[in-house]
Amino acid sequence: MASSVIRIAVLHFQHETVTFLRNDTTIDDFVYPGSPARGEALLASGPKSYMGGFVQVAREYDGVELVGIESPLWPKTGSGSGWVTQEAYETFVGRMIAQLKAEGPFDGVYLCVHGAMAARGVPRPEAELARRVREVVGRRAFIAATFDPHGNEDEEFLRYADLAFCGKYFPHYDSHLQGERAARALIRAIRGTYRPAHATVKVPIISATVVQWTGASPWMDLVQRALTWEAREPDAYVNVYFGFPWSDVPDVGMTMQVITNGDADLARRIADDMALFAWRRREALLHSTRVHAIPDGVALAKQAVAAGETPVVLADHSDRSGYATWLLHEIIAQGLSKTLIATVADAAATGALGDAKAGDAFDMEIGGLADESAGDPVPIAGTVLHVIQRHGQLWIAVGFGIGNVLVISPYLVQIMEPSTLTELGLDVSEFQVIAIKSRVHFRRGFDDSGFARTILLVEPTEPFLGTVRLDALAYRNVELSDFYPYGNPEFTVRSRV
Ligand SMILES: [Zn+2]
Image 1 (cartoon, rainbow, N blue to C red):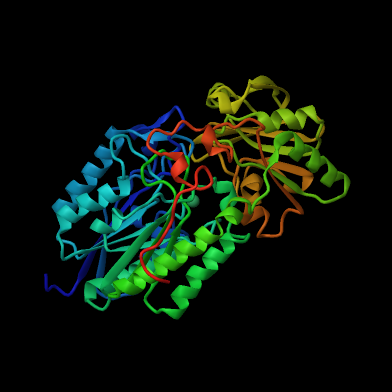
Image 2: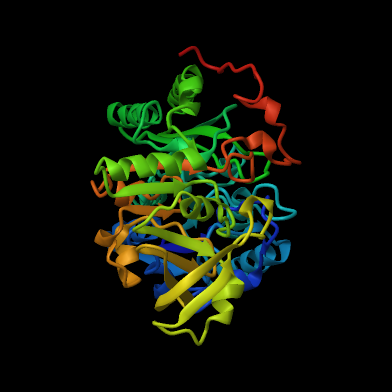
């Protein structure tokens, strides 16, 4: 144990699980060229994200050895798949634990997790991973993790782990930064100059992700308050988990988690203050982003085009399968032109179009039917413009109507940057309206970058799977009335703030 080299095992296991989708997330979904990854390949995955930040800072220290334990990367379904099967969870975690045992001992472990994974038969997948890792590495090792702010977490994780760092912004601009902080704090803990103390407070607020944009108050104020606490109290780390309501898991909802250097009372006071601050603003938190019904949103897009306020971004935040056609249907019904729709998922269509080439006539029904939230297939007659191989998947761009283009992909795609459209061979300047499937992440490339003049969030008129009306979901592990705004829960904190 007295060896001068610090050995840190690095593990990755992430998913943001929509448990209400029909298709489970299976072993196969995690296996594709490049995944699972181990060694340097794992450490090089996500260079701009949590992993990249962790590796960069850990390697600024002499005498730190990182061991990349074989880990699956994000499943190829993205977030468009349901429950992670117990077989998938046990298989990948089982391999990680076996390799940890074989290659130990370790002074520290870095867990690059998301927090909104939902696995069948494992109520708290990240905490369970930490528990099993702790069994192997023992009590003298330190375990640090990074989380996405959509994590559904409670006290359990820090029962087994020592440190947690959650991204603060949505879109998640600070993933790399949180990885950097995790590395520095973990190495300090191993060297004995940081003694992690923590507090966790659940806040009974549940919200759809579309309203959680931190570019608007009071979400922005929540970020600012966390930053203020961190600035005035050196060595305090303040994590605000917004939660992910499409996971039907017992630890769903908002959570405050604070870590300090040996001062549990301070951690408690900060966590309580953050929780009360959110609770006082609960009504405004739920109403910070306007969401239009699709027919209204498309009509507003037409008005914006007429007023020259282009480009217009129409973002359908609600599609959880990728197959939804409500927006495509309405764009055709209202006769929009120079409109790009990216994407509608249809694995059967892309599967049947393997031999397609640019210039081919196109006449097919596209999308819909994945579940009732996806709507009906929409007939599209036009011309194939581009056939694109992307990350081993076939994407097709079809021209139809007056300057319209539909991009078909095999899985749900969140277009976050105009550059993704450029990579597909499309000239984004040719479009007046760009219709995408995204909730908040698109603001990275379309809003915060200054690209779009008009931004309209839309959802179907019915209370389907992905809409802000969470009471349309058939929860089995969550009592919705325990959360604002679906009930009037009591909320008090332990300390006197
Ligand atoms: Zn997220």
